[in-house]
Length: 171
Image 1 (cartoon, rainbow, N blue to C red):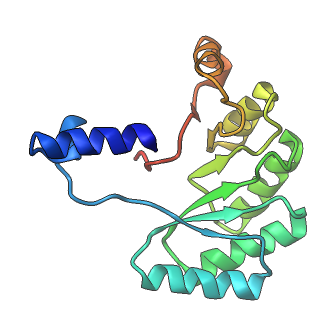
Image 2 (cartoon, rainbow, N blue to C red):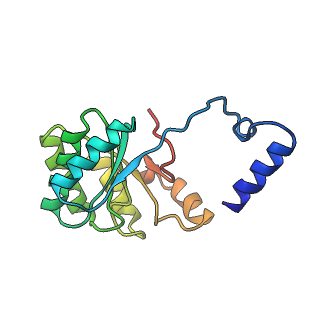
């Protein structure tokens, strides 16, 4: 945050927008809003409020239990049809459990666009399995604590499809 503030102050001093420093021309940012670990009724209501705000990317916290998580995701999908759905397990699953959730959702025609940190941080093989077998992009959040973590994973072909940040939605 401090480095961004310094860059912002510097670009203001030379009278250019910060986005121009990074080559951007856009004037808007696409972001997501999160639905926390709540019951289905509250999740659906939250999704409706989020859509009314004009947000079309919703991150859904999962990891409280398979049945509750499935119901929460289904409720958000009902409340925000057409929204891009991110799942965030914060390391709560093993690869098998994450794949079970993805399979159950696909049976209901719910296909998340990204699954953030579905498995414990050191389980790079599990991240790769969730990506490959679950046919979903995964984001390594807690798994990447340093540049060397990120660099070492790039060298391993099984990690293709693993993102290192979830600041934007790639199409």
